Amino acid sequence: IGDLIGLQVEDEEGNSLGVLKDVLETGANDVYLVSCPGRKDLMLPAIKDCIREVDLEAGVMRVHVLPGLMDL
Image (cartoon, rainbow, N blue to C red; front, top):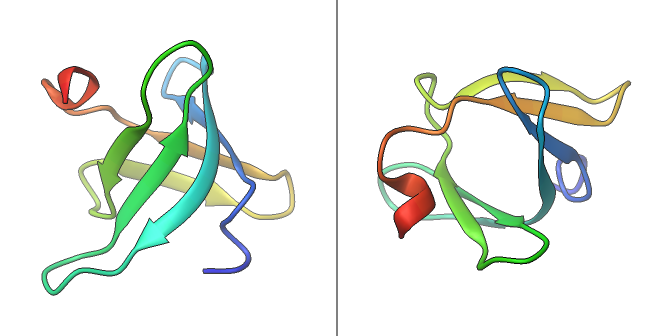
């Protein structure tokens, strides 16, 4: 988890969404909390359908934002 905090989070097209600021450990799966400038934090489930790539060396996490997640 410590390696993930601070990663830049991008969508599949390379658009910046924000910075990973916390990982919430739940019973089913973890939830990544992304600090997004100008709007409320984005909560992404740590599942294969959503988290596409984590590149620790580059400091980037690429994600697919599932429909409705930006509205929560």
